[in-house]
Amino acid sequence: MSSLLILGAGGHGKVVADTAVAIGQWKKIAFVDDQHPSLKTVLDWPVLGRLEEAKKFLPEYDGFCVAIGNNKLRTKLLKLYLDQGFTAPCLVHPTAYISPFATLGPGCVVFAQGVVNPETQVGQGSIINTGASVDHDCTLGEGVHLCPGVRLAGEVHVGQQTTLGTSAAVIPRINIGNQVMVGASSVVITDIPDHSTATGVPAKLIKKT
Figure 1 (cartoon, one colour):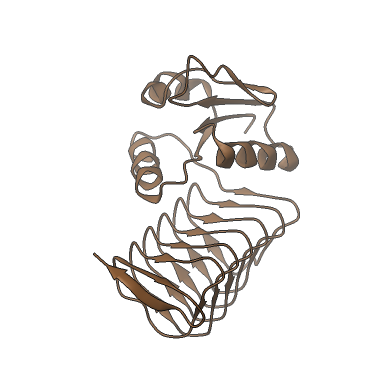
Figure 2 (cartoon, rainbow, N blue to C red):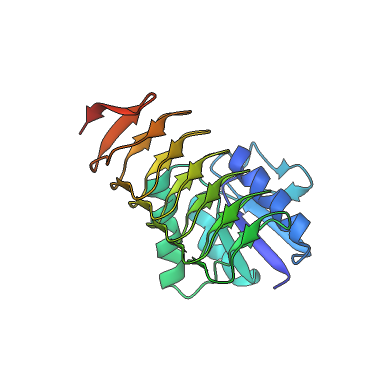
C-alpha cells in the first residue's frame, strides 16, 4: 500500500499519521474531518473534506483508518466502509511487539511500545495505545480502546466498545463487559458487567446504565 486516508484529524488522528510515517509504507497520507473547511492541514498533511465525504475520496487510497476516539462511531464507520469493499490495514508502530501467534482484526492500531502477546485476539477497530500491553490468551472485542500504559494480565476478556483509562491494570482471568468505562489508574480485580463505569483501587462500580 502507498496511500492512506485517515478519518478524523484530531489528536488521535495525528498519532495514527505519525505511526504510518514511522512504518514507512505510505507515500501519501490525507485526512477527512468535520472541522473542514476551516481546518485544511494537520502537521504535514491535507484535510480534504468532511467525514461524510470520505466515500468520495476513498477510491483514491489503498487503505483507510478510522482515527476517532469515540468507540461507537469508530466501529460504525469502520464497518460501513469495510462493507463497501475498502481496505482498513492494521497500523503497528515499529517499536511495538505483536506476537506471531496473536490476531489483530482489520483497522486496529498499536502505537509505540505497545505489546500484544501470544494467543490474544484483538477485535477490529481496536486501539492499543502508547505503551499499553496485553498478555497471553486475552480477547478484546471490536472497538476497544486501551489507553496509554494500560496493563492486561493473561486470559482477560474485554467486551465491545469498552475503554480502559490511562494506566489501568487488570489481573488475570477477569471478564469486562461491553461498553464499559474503566477509570484511569484503576486496578480491576473482579468482573465488570456491561454498560457500566468502574474506578478506583480496587475498581468499584460507580454507575450502570
